Image (cartoon, rainbow, N blue to C red):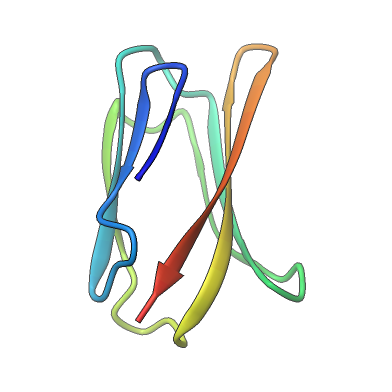
Length: 79
């Protein structure tokens, strides 16, 4: 579970989906694979976002969450 600046990402590892929750507004979320390819992005998502990963390949993905001038980065493992 990634927990920073009142942001939670769970479950991790994930299979069919993972959720991002924040107490503060999120401006932008992007998920990229290990090659840097953009998988999905969300602009001004809700404070609770469920991301469906059922058609993603197994592996590690990098998640970047932007809140104002703060950028939080983490990794989610898809099994």
